[in-house]
Image (tube, rainbow, N blue to C red):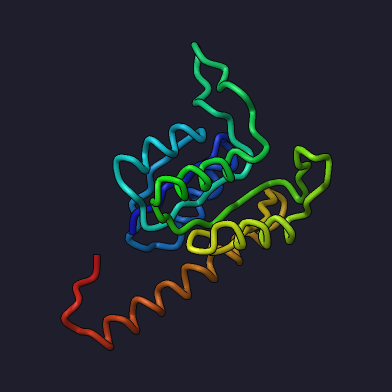
Length: 166
C-alpha cells in the first residue's frame, strides 16, 4: 500500500512514520512537506492513502525559500485542487490543532472541520484525527482505520480469489 505523508513538522512526521512502521504492514511511504510538494507527488503517482496535515506552507521550506505563505488550511487547498483536477485520493487528515480560525473570523472545532471536509470532499475524507504528542489517541484512531482496511482486503480476497493483492 502506497502512502503519502504530507507533514511539514519534523517531530510529528517522525512520530507518524514510526507508528506506521510499527504496524508491520507492507507500506511504501513517501513524504511531502508542503501543499505544492504534495500536489507534485500526486501528479507523479496517486497514493492509495494520503495522510494530510491541515496547516501547511505553500512551498517546501529550505535554505533558499521560507515556504511562501503559511496556510492554516493548506491541506484543504490540496484537496480542493485535487477535486478540480478530478483526482481522487483517499485521505486521513491528522492535525495538531483542536480548532481553526476561518477567514470570516469564525472558529471551527475539529468535529465541525471533519463535517465540513466530509461534506465538501465526500470521496476523499476517511477521517479527521486530532494529533497530540502527549497521548496516543491518534494512534488508536489510525490503527482502527488500518484494521478495517486489512479486514476489507481479506474479505475481498476471499470473495474473489482471482484478484491479486497489490
